[in-house]
Length: 177
Picture (cartoon, rainbow, N blue to C red):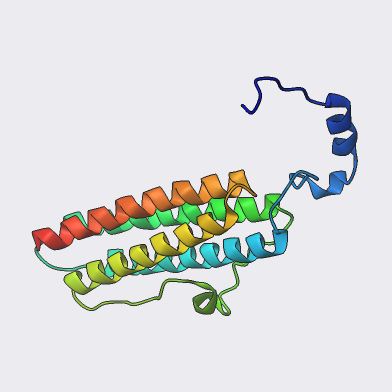
């Protein structure tokens, strides 16, 4: 609170809400740069889709004495990455954009790489590297967005927290190898 008092011009808010209603969630009070935020969100979407595909491949390709527990971790992470992709796509639409699910150029839009790995240990390492890339990328996005778009910032913070959990899971798996 700034000075302990707060008043709001409810009629002005009501009047503004009736203007440009075709913009949906993007009101006059939106302080972000929609074109930049939409680009960032589509890059995050591509990152999550690439991670989903890599985890799925690792789930099916994992073999060896320790593979059962690792496979279940890969599958869980794949499902969570897909949920992140869905949430990002939903936010893109809320901001008046179009989620880019096109396979063409997905690796160019993605911050992480699609590294297959050949052994179980390689797969875990590649997934851990990708999680670390996502964590730093999303942190930079969060810093850029700041207070201009609290909803997108909060979404990216939630995704980042889950990516950190994934990274910790993978680092623990490597320690057990």
